[in-house]
Image 1 (cartoon, helix red, strand yellow):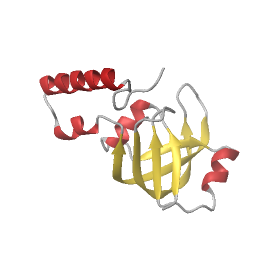
Image 2 (cartoon, rainbow, N blue to C red):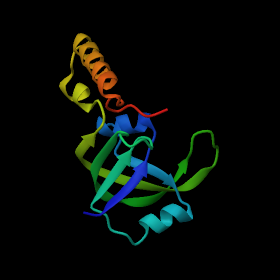
Image 3 (cartoon, helix red, strand yellow):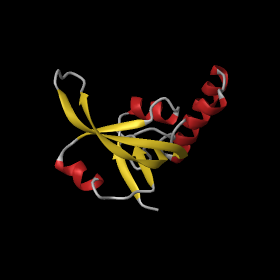
Length: 132
């Protein structure tokens, strides 16, 4: 399975995992042109951060289109690739289960305390945490 890997900010990662965002945008530059134009992908792997255990999501790749988009803090529309995201296949290293199962606040605190205790005993980072 051929994967297009993109690194994204946490707020956008959360929106995609929750199904509220269905496209990821990249300004048209030579780097993304080489990665997109004339290439075929099966899935898109989105990674939130650069840590070994950074949250990641795998979604089906539905292609891309070229659009004009006004970026945050800009006043002029710029040529942009709109990468279309399909079905969510998997999520790793993310507190997705909490969102999916709608755990109550008490359950969340218990889970976080258990995760923190476990990480202190093993010397590892809690799931979804990034190294400083």
